[in-house]
Amino acid sequence: MNLIVKILAYLNTLPARLKGLKIGKNSFIGPGYDFLFVSLKGITLGDNVLIGKNAWLQTYPNDGKKNLIFIDNGTQIGRNFTISAVKKISIGKKCLLSYNVSLFDHDHDFSNRELTPMDTQVSAGKPVEINDGCFIGTHSFILKGVHLGKHCIVGANSVVTKSFPPYSVIGGNPAKLIKVRKK
Image 1 (cartoon, helix red, strand yellow):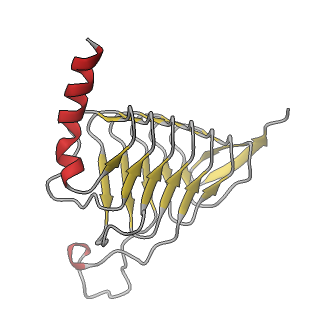
Image 2 (cartoon, rainbow, N blue to C red):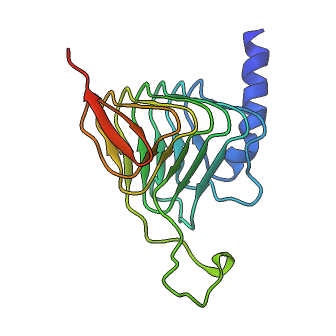
């Protein structure tokens, strides 16, 4: 039975692998992920990474030589996950991201008011780093330039626009420090 599951998992990820996604041992992306009109070059999943169904992973034009998105060993991510990188997004070991979580290291450039949103490009971006052991609650957004220290907890429905130190509990829109977890 285990062999059949591994074969099905491999076949499910084959289109992503052909588009440049690097997938570690025992890692899996659920069915329904987008691969047709997105670039997956520069995305690496470590070992034992699980991403739920209907994920959107995307890197903007990349020669594939640099890691724009790195998800480290043992991290689990719920369904409807969105991650899009121009610069770099890294997620540490053994993180847990709930469903409908979105991470972006860029936004749209609206500096030319004559251009419509469909005609604008994305900004240059700022790296996003989520350290080991973090939890991101459902329907949360992590935006460009954010660095979350290890073991941070982000409450559901949060919009994180700035960085927080290790062991922070944060929440809200925009996210604010609620408390720092003690030993």
